[in-house]
Structure formats: C-alpha cells, structure tokens
Image (cartoon, rainbow, N blue to C red; front, side):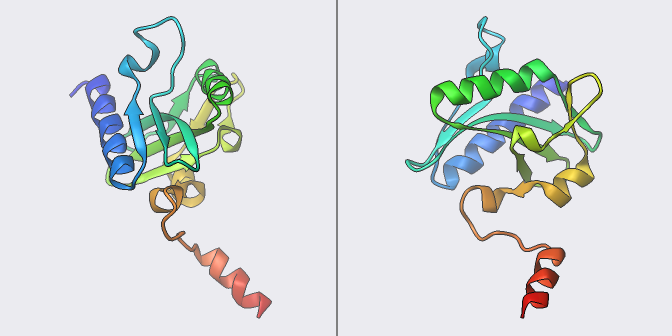
Length: 147
C-alpha cells in the first residue's frame, strides 16, 4: 500500500475517532495539495475547544515534519482561532498528540517524533478528547511523595 493511501486511511481513522468522541470534525480535502494555501489535515471542535491538526503515521520509524509545514499549521490555527496539534500514530499504537512547541527540532529546522517519545511524552487520545487522563508511573510516584 502506498504511503499516501496509508496516510489517507489513517487521517480518516482519526476523523472517525474524533467524531465518535463527540467532536464536529472534518478532513481537509487533499490537505493543501489542491490549493496554494497550506491547510491542516483535520479540523475538530466540540464547542469549547477547536483544533487544527496535522496527522502523521508510521510503521515505527521516526516521523519527520518539514519546518514550513509546522509553521503553516501554527499560522492557520492562530488565524482560525484553533489550537495547533500534531497527531502521530505508529502501527499497533493509538494516536498521540503534541503541541508543535513540544517537538524535537532538527539541525535543519525540521521536526521529529520518535515512537518512544510519542509513547512517553505524547498526550494519549483519551486525554486529548477529555476522557480520563492516563497516569504515568512517574506521576503516581510523585503524588505518593507528597502524601
């Protein structure tokens, strides 16, 4: 399966999951390739919060985003009144979300997300949509230290 077809399938999967979680959601047609303007892959909102999302998927290799792509997402989100987020999904894992400012920036000015970074530091889907936040072992041990 070509990476474009797989990416399209993953974007549709994210749209469906956000819809099931109660968000009004749309996938941008051709995500910018049909127009001169850069558009986010997905727009989603629930009446309280609105997101402009760039969605990326990988079998397990690091995900790279061009600096201009992320800058365009931030610019669009600010003008639209939405929060910009990068959504990443690795095979056999769920979606994880990042604020663009939390991503690793390469020497060339591009952005990278490794699978282990997504699993350790990304915001899990359930937390992103307002479900119960996932507690990490470090969070639990920190809380017990306060007792």
